[in-house]
Length: 399
Image 1: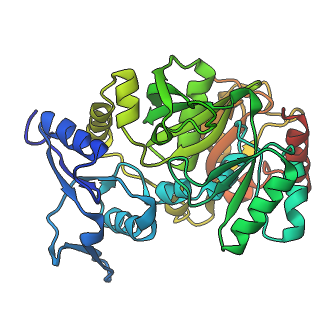
Image 2: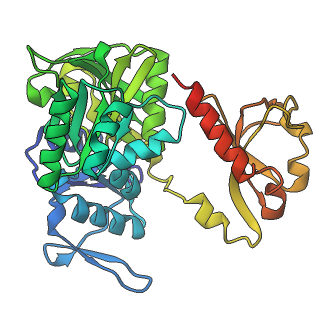
Image 3: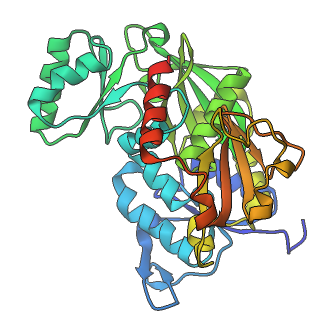
């Protein structure tokens, strides 16, 4: 590796002795990179006009090329602020601050996923005591999973066998000012789940976790047993897509094996490496460092924010409906380019086709991501009533 290829990496972690932190440090140094562990809480942030700055333990912080955030739940707010400050200074972050914030909030991440055609556990979140029992019934009734939104590693997860027990538990937790998520219990996957480790656009390792004895939580921290698993294509696509929807480059995606396919339970932004590396023998830390070296120059861009600088232009998504004149036509014959509309990508039944070619044929159901004049794009955007009707139809036909 030449000095030009060598990266200056900072791992943001409160404990340099944690397995995951040590493995990332070792993998980075083995590949010739300069790497150091830095305590997230020791950073100071200074927000100044055109010059965001950071200090570390009261001194100016030496420039780095990359940060690897390992932000624990107890310091989420401050940790995510530190990551944002690095981003404003032009430093590449393994996972973006927006992705970290979304993933940390279990409810928010499920809300984001729910907009897409991807399997998730039916969930409810209510505050009024009178709404608790109806919410339990609406997610499928007892048994039901009760989750604290702030819980990690299986803590704060309860299985309630009856509706009355569930109602009592939720009322008690709410009295103590705890935010509680109510989730459908996927019976066919009791005591078993899959952890898929996503790096970039692929799953680099996957394991099945099984609970021990009467325990229904399969987390390794709760004594769960692990075994390597070869993921079916559907599960791999779901894991990668879930990570990308949340906004993460690296994620641990937890899925249940439902009767109709994968069911996303959680997307973790700082997944531990010990369990997955021990179960699979894969050098996951090395995969992460290799990914960083390859992608460090591809910084995050907010297309809607950047492209809105062109007055009268916008980024928009619109579907190809059954009776659309565009359905069945190659992109080159659609007339879109002649009207200054650039099709940046096509989403077709969950599969993503970036930079489509002129020979690619548009079909009903395609979702096009386009850039062009607002006045022209408006012609293709569905009316609000049509959008609502389509969402209702999709919900009624989903399994």
